[in-house]
Image (cartoon, protein in one colour):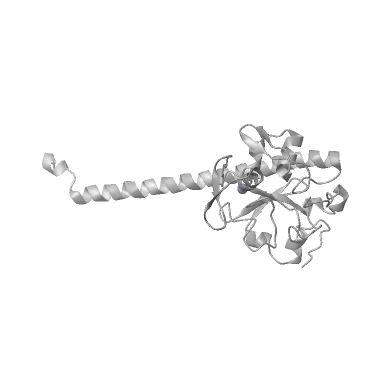
Amino acid sequence: MKIRGLKGAAFSLVELLVTIAIIGVLAALVTSGLGRAKSAGRATVCRNNLRQTYFALALYVSDFRAYPPAQAVFDLVVHREGIDLHPLIWYGALGVYSGIDPRIFVCPQEVTFLRPGLSMSGSDGKPHSVLPAQMMTAFLNYGYNATGSGIFGAGSNLGLGEGQGDRRAVGEQLVLNPSDMIAFGDGKGLVISPVQADENPPERHNSKASLGFCDGHVETQTPRKWCEKSETARSRWNNDHLPHL
Ligand SMILES: [Zn+2]
């Protein structure tokens, strides 16, 4: 047997470089695996949030016999658990009404905390001071199916209700197929819609978005699928379960 001397046992430069390269590859594999696991975990938390939000919605609907409008008629800011709940806006109304943990209204994949005194970029790219209502809209990262296939602000009564001005809330009986009616989910602001120019629901969980339905179940698919201009896809946005193409 050949016994190598001290000189033979030392690493050559090539061996060292190969070892470093292998360690690098292994580290990259572990890191990307962890990244995937983290993002899968966030997607699970998101779906769970939407199921919890449904419980608040069900409580609200059973008492009021109507769905909360996207924007309510009263205005009051409530601070709880370090998160601002704004009953003017649908999720604030649900949270304040049901007393549910407000953290369920935040998708963990894209958390933006804005506080009074901070500023956000305006459409001109310059920082603007944040008014409370705008702050809440910026913070909110779940949207409400307020208008179905209609346009927000145009008086659409196809979704679960806009609630602006004297527009009335959508009664429980108006939603003809709750198990196939989108209620809320991953969104960029106050509302989600299949007809908006910018993608909303957005690509958030591995290029997909999770939406909750009026019966409490949650589905995850690409925004393109959610917003597809087909009878099946569009019917799910409208309370009369018709596509309104
Ligand atoms: Zn999400």
